[in-house]
Each structure stands twice: as structure tokens, then as C-alpha cells.
Image (tube, rainbow, N blue to C red; front, side, top):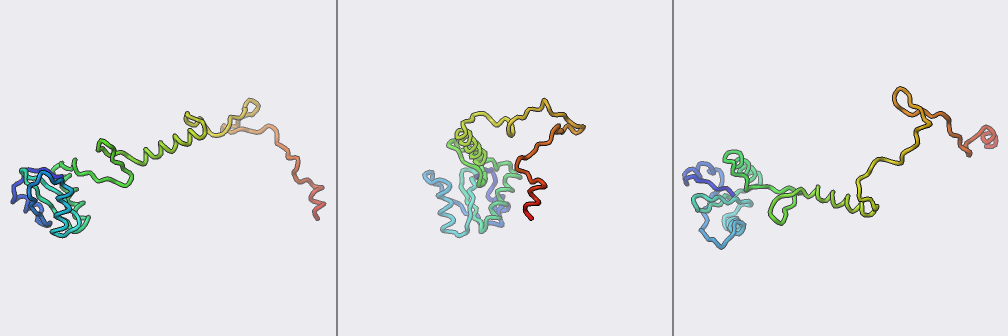
Length: 165
């Protein structure tokens, strides 16, 4: 909602590229009902309410780009865009009316459920198990150097390769 102290002539000059209709003052109707009635009677697809000296005007737009441009311009020029918030797909409107990031809440709930299933209420402490490094030596790149090479018991030997032929 854009509240301003403009004269009707200034309104015409500022919003000359759009249709501006004066609404009847009816305290019982909310802004969304006024918008629906004006869009239904005058055409257009999108609408925005402007209050000037306790008179309600409705701006009617034919496409969403014009509406977004008007909202952006009013936020930049007048710094009155605090009431005009666009909700993205990831935002959730809380019970007190503030916008919250829904993606962050979903991730926290999901990680909490995973921790409950695993029985782990603390965060992960690291990858894998710790291996004893007392017998290992480190090279110049601080990499472990194996002192002995492991042997497989079922590895192929020369006698096995002769039997295959």
C-alpha cells in the first residue's frame, strides 16, 4: 500500500501510463476486496491501492511487469515500499505476519529428524573412525607412510595363473 500526500494532479502525472480509479470510501471493505471489485469491473489483471488524503485510489495494470515496475519505483523514489513485500516461493508468512525463510526451517526440521533416528543429538564430530597413527610415519607432505604392505590371502599367485590356462 502506498500512502502519499500528493495532489490529484500529481497523481495523474505520476501514474499517467496506467489506469487510476477512485474508490468509494467504505470502511467495511478490505483492500483485497476493493482490488477484486475494481479488476472485475474495469478489467486488467493486477491492481495496487493508493491512499491519498484519506481517499482510496486503485491502480490497474494489464500485466505483471507493469505492477512490479510500479512497486519498485515507489520503493526507490518514496522509500514507502516497506509495506510492499513480495513473498518468494521459499518464504513463509508466520503467525505474527513477518516473513521467514522456509527453506532454512525445513532443513533444520529434517536434520533434527535424522538425528533422532540415529540417536545422535549432537552434531557430527568427523568422518569415519579414528585410526591409530602411533606406528605410522609421516612424509614431507604430512601423509602417512605405510611401514608394511598388507597381503591378501586370496590374491592371485603364479600357480593360480598357470591353472587357468
